Image 1 (tube, rainbow, N blue to C red):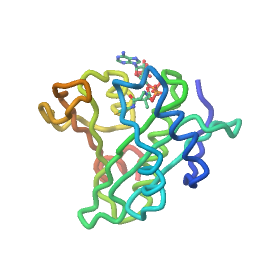
Image 2 (tube, rainbow, N blue to C red):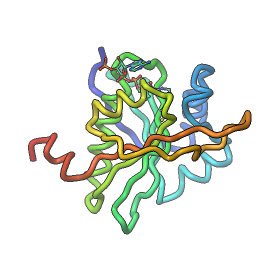
Image 3 (spheres, rainbow, N blue to C red):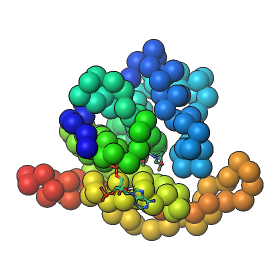
Image 4 (tube, helix red, strand yellow):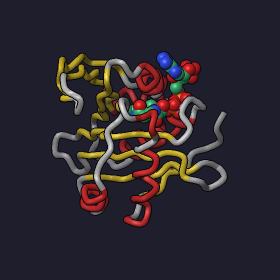
Amino acid sequence: MTGPVSLHRAAPADIETIMEIERQPEFEHLVGRSARSIHEELVADPGHAYLLGLGDDGAVRGIAILRGIGDPMGGIYLKRIAIRDPGQGFGSAMLAAVIDWAFSLGDVNRFHLDHFTTNSRAHRAYEKCGLRQEGVLREAYRLPEGGFADLAVMAILRSEWESRKGN
Ligand SMILES: CC(C)(COP(=O)(O)OP(=O)(O)OC[C@H]1O[C@@H](n2cnc3c(N)ncnc32)[C@H](O)[C@@H]1OP(=O)(O)O)[C@@H](O)C(=O)NCCC(=O)NCCS
């Protein structure tokens, strides 16, 4: 099991760690990875939030990248989440903290993401955080090796998040 998660905004100095976590060999067909130049640009972009999830020992155990900060439609999109040691409960605990962080920004109504339909572990972790599947974007992702993959769209609305929190 995991202890509490503490979230921190990443700084340019954290990009090395972010690239290391997203590039774990077994993640190749599960999650995207970006070039250093893209991370350098986006970590400083006010429309994005780069969050680090630290365990109770202070070590970085996960990363999350959000897009849509300040979106006039009130939607925040989880572009990426990756955990250093998956399957131990940290990912769902970190995502719950990320969702709290996103809704605490105020004018946010919808937190959404997509994942490969084959990524059952991610789907289960997202369900545990209250996200619901809304549909499937058929062949929406062009695979580097050729062909396309289906993406499942999941979201949690502010009203649903408030109900879960008992607000
Ligand atoms: C997706 C990810 C962030 C989830 O974090 P995590 O720490 O592994 O998730 P948790 O351990 O909190 O929860 C995983 C759940 O999936 C379940 N699970 C594990 N393998 C599974 C599988 N093959 N099929 C279905 N469920 C599975 C676990 O049992 C657990 O559910 P439970 O608590 O009800 O038993 C993490 O696995 C990760 O970084 N994966 C690689 C990158 C990735 O896929 N990113 C998401 C891209 S959309």
